[in-house]
Length: 319
Image 1 (cartoon, rainbow, N blue to C red):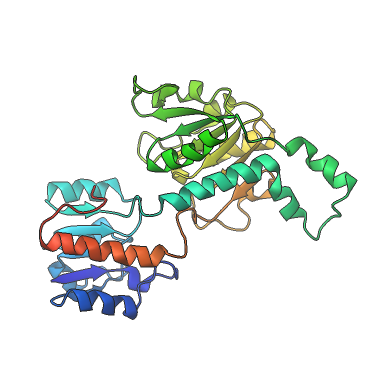
Image 2 (spheres, one colour; image 1 turned 90 degrees about the horizontal axis):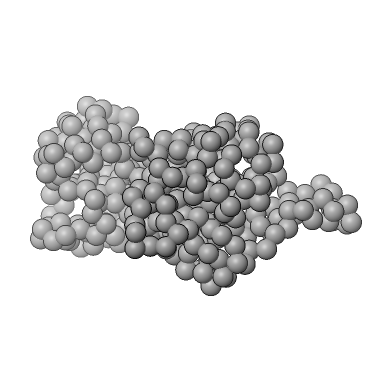
């Protein structure tokens, strides 16, 4: 069986598959051969015999050259809808790692909540730049908020949101939910078309939406203007769902209290990215789902799913 993998050439250590990982795979599955895919090489003849793809940089050009492809295992959560549609129409199985790193994303969201509410970032930014005396206390006093018994809105209520909300409930927070379609059986639930109303009078608004035609820049000036001045906006979904120019307008005018962003539209962001200049905005470089077990769990999941694939059993995290 021929497996095509583009994770060998990754420039990121937490993603890069090593020869040691390859030995583990070959020791468990004897009759396999690995083709190292380089997405920049478009006309590799070996592509046409690949039956299994494992990686996160596949594109339609390469996909259409894999004439014998039976399964795509995407080593991340977000996969292009065009690839999903093509795969379904050609009987190609698709799976990803969507639930593997939910705990880490949830922990990052909670970190944003605590840091922004308690003004921790101000102490970090000022370290070595100013004395932490009376003037500093007076400066940050109006940015120190409580986190208990607040109202929190989840825009997108999947497994990650449920993990976060479990902790929030323990702090007496009231949970509100935005789903694509309103569920009449859930309290405090809004449909996506009522997002403007949903964000009103909430202390935290957490965006966990995927990037689709419907959700592109769904967070815009109109939505932000409906948020309270005391609100914090968090984005752990996709950068494309937020109009960043509109967010900056709101931040600059102090119309919300701050923002925590793990994703932005153009990644990796440059050091002159305009939202970096605001002390009440925390930006992390799309690391919410990463932890020290990332690669280990990634390889283990592929091996587990490959075994299922060989005997035609349902794959974990199939799409």
